[in-house]
Amino acid sequence: MMRARGTSLRLFYIALTLSSVAWAADFANGQTSPAHDGPPLAATPGAEPPPLRSVMAKHFLVGTAIEPDSIDSPADAALLAAQFSSLTAENKMKPGTIGVAEGRYDFEPADKIIAFAHAHGMAVRGHTLVWHFQSGNWKEAPDWFFAGARDEPQYRDIVAARLRKYVTDVVTHFRGKVYAWDVVNEVISDNSNQVYREDSPWYRAFGKDYIAIAFRAARAADPDVKLYINEYNTDDPNKREKLLTVIRELRAEGVSIDGVGHQMHISVNRPPLANIKQALDDVAALGLENQVTELDVSLYADSGECWRNPHACLPDLGRSVPNDVMRAQALRYRAVFDVFEHEPSIKAVTFWGYSDKHTWLSSTPVSRTNLPLLFDADLRPKAAYWTIVDPAYQP
Ligand code: XIL
Image (cartoon, rainbow, N blue to C red; front, side, top):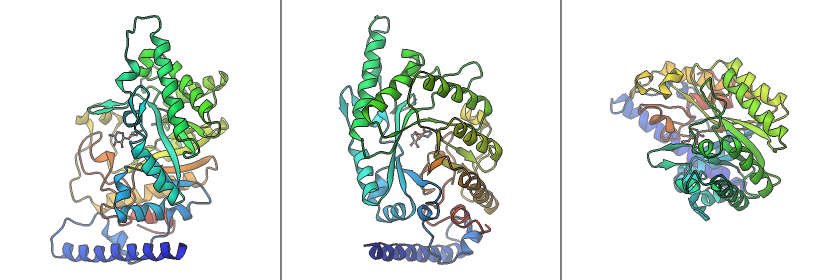
């Protein structure tokens, strides 16, 4: 069995190498755009990439977020099974997919991801039970949760009951199949005058209590699953202080919480490594676990303002991204892994995707070329990949 898997993997990488050679010939003939990181890749011709999951096994699980269509592509499926020890559903375990209507659920796409993961010895982390996100067709806090008259005395209880039922049913469905849940996602405010995110339909219906309700229901439905609070920009000391205060308060109320998920959407030169390390240390000091849940390294060192105002985002690098930028990205990946590998409280590091052919950063916060992941659009390992699996590698 193992031998068969090894052989098919080797064939897979030989095919990739051959396609790289063909591609390089095309490039020489001027038929394609310049290499994104040609020189670094040329440094390891034909080498079979060592599986990330084995290289990191002594430290933590290594995961990626996926959509179910990745499983349908044999090349993608082989790469996933070879490289990763954990999977997250990029979208299909969010309430916008699962919570079709009150008491009606669509578990099918998530179950497909879980079946694939388990068939290949991978763990699955659940993301996410509660999220405020709403944009275009994406509604992660579906309207049915909030139906009814807000001025009725029963309104709060009705919405609380719906939330409890949703969390209970979903956690029960995945019990024993998912080892950790992001119970709530992005509940802390970025505004200096707010602790909790107040522009959330959950906050508007309840104030902060929805967080404790969700955690308690999740714990009651599965006593063994790890329960996480997931957040972005935890490297920012002000935001982190709010997050830690919220965690302390929840624990003081007897709410069971196991860890903090740090999304870690970072860029080639932001934020400082010391801030990343401090975020992990502060959580560990509370006796909690850490997970890096959505790692990617954007090519753009945007200011925070870019997320509020698209005009503040850096201009599109276009199709020919300079090799220097790709080198900087590779070194950045090595630098953050140096931090992660020295933090025993980290239980898993999950990338928000695996191939540059599919990344939320090509459309968010603005549409532009972005190549934030470890494998290029043709699934070839990038310099970023080699620096992680081989610290001696010089991009
Ligand atoms: C993103 C997905 O990648 C997109 O496909 C979707 O349109 C929106 O959500 N923080 C999170 C993730 O917690 O769930 C988000 O995923 C990225 C930011």
